Image (cartoon, helix red, strand yellow):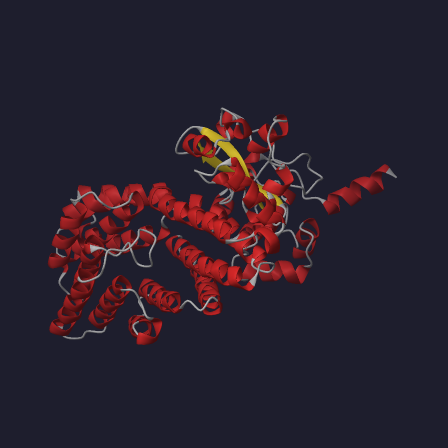
Length: 508
């Protein structure tokens, strides 16, 4: 009887593996891909096993069938964080290796994701001292760092606790005076206490909205979602996509879930916000070089913008798809998408029209059009931007300012065969110190490319080394890709000390 039970457990649950199992090169590369299907494949084929595990065996552990597992391993990255967390728990994957936050298990036989206190050395990094806030997505909890400023501004210090090794869930359970019901608070995709500046009355309203969207989800709650999105955009520039994506996917899950139950007028407003968030998620996936996921979110942004009757967002998504085509060096598609984005039907704000015009100039430069034509379009973009009215910080395309335009001009001149002019433009903008941490790394990579093409190997290598440090810090695979191209250009100078140092920093 005991023997049969042990055999049953051996089939139902994966084997216990040593800690070195997860540090193997095959697993490290799989985790770096942010693709759970690749993690599954690496797990099954890991050298620690006497022979490769079958898809049938692993599918049993993950509550899947063999065909489903096969599609996950070979298809686009799964987006459902609830499933990702359940699978990670089933395989007992250490939380610090994942690209999303995972609470610890109660026991090895349960697939429930139950938040528990973490030891200080296991706590996720935060920008300031704070606590861990559970974000519930599809019924599963993710622990998200909350800084002290957020806690203080929300008036919820008693909920989160005073140190980073106490989860918000446990603190809420210990606080009998809290007017917020924990289950209501954590429904619907994101936790209401994640936003600075909300009082308890407002938090209660959000909690009710997540529980009864048709009755309570209204303009103020949509504004709350909007502020979460704005904060995520600010965080991206400083922290990078790895720390921003989990919150964004939770927000988009909440929007998609709640939009099914609200009044029609609120649904349109919610989907307009969702389109903005989906476009941003597409950008984050571009930054980590996951083009399939980026296309998925750009398409979702277009769909939501169409239903919300938001013409400007539709044109804006076409612009972003054009910029993504530049990542693939697809000049013709980039140009035609930019031209489509510039159609009058989209009624684009002046700043976005300026960006679209500049994007068309970049496409023409890549296709070899005369420099006078390229310069003419760049001048048109400058005129549009100069005459653009002052927009609110969250307006569509508000980020496109004089410095942004000059940086894009520099990229265009590189493609037009004028790398020395490009390097000077990059240097002028970089010296102002106005760019975010992530953008500083990326545009320094572009600057290094221009310097390398100008025959300045030592300066290119020096700038490239500084860029590589930032790229590794914020996990910007897009920046790493550009730096890899720079290293190829510098290959004929590979014996120079500065170039050797650059190569070492990039491959560290």
